[in-house]
Length: 493
Image (cartoon, rainbow, N blue to C red; front, side, top):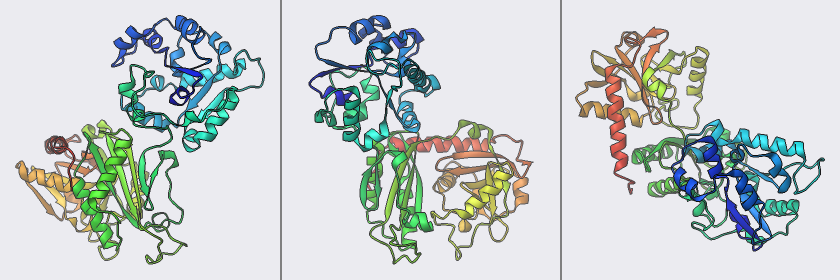
């Protein structure tokens, strides 16, 4: 819409059938009353007066959502030219869920498919056209992002209108032709001066603005070829990166152990993380995968000295929250034959890209129908799960496996600290599976999961098979701590 609005010969309308759609469906919106008061809710009247009636400029661009056609006659197809803009579904889910609950009806793919099918059946693509082989004009949003000039030129040619280079840019900020819903849906768009940049990221020392489907690294990258790198999973809550200092400290420790120079300070990397989530309009319910690899290789070869340039840094933020069901009902574990490695083989304290030890364990747990793998250390003591840290509760006391063969979990450490601060007895110790089977409770922790109860291990019910009081208390304490930490706002390092 912003592109066509820059043309001197074109007027634009922003979703003129929105009030009709709200009246027809009865759906709620934060701005429902304002839209119904400002727009004509009679869809047929809108079509006759605004879309097909007299207009001050030769061309009219009307932006619609496919679902807004609800209840209207197909006759509109015979009186206009139609362009269908499609986006990768995951991107649609991300932006839509920031405002409303995404459902099949709300996302509108079914309605859009019906419209495309009707257009193809009628053959009405160009106004007053004839039934024949012509097909609807479909524009891929990702292609438009990558090649704006080429796609817009081709679109203008298909519509039979002259190309105007002004379509490639516009001033930042709200527009007079924005719909009343702009404050909810257009905040990121208002920051742009051209529609061709996606969320920010870093790769090989260059900042790349790319959509998730197009994010990639070289096949000669050390992380891809050798698993040579470290990573962190970071939570964004209420606009704040939770325990970011501890995550970056662990990342830096791993890089130093691998003799890798990140090429940035911790403050600079934290700033990049915030720039990335801000560019995507993300504030809460976001999980970030931060990855650092040794960088590009000139040839497949493992020697770290044979590396070109700086490390590769990749930041992948996504709207991602754990299901509430395991939080209450718990998960099931299966003890696998795959052991945790000794520190002098591959230090399990490194959060490395090479996760085959954990993946092999996860495969066995999957085959057993469990949710996670429970892993033992080289001496046969209970150690950790394949992606979370493990705890048991016996007679009100929390037991954490000794840390020497597991990742130094940040949520694990926080839970132990909360136990000490709130009078919950706890200790780090060696223990066997027999003591797990006889435990009153068990639970796991992780940045993404938080605190999740375990109700079954190797087919044996833990306690009474339900979330226990200690796990519930720690869930509540941890949630309160997360809220309090993030309420203090973003921290400078």
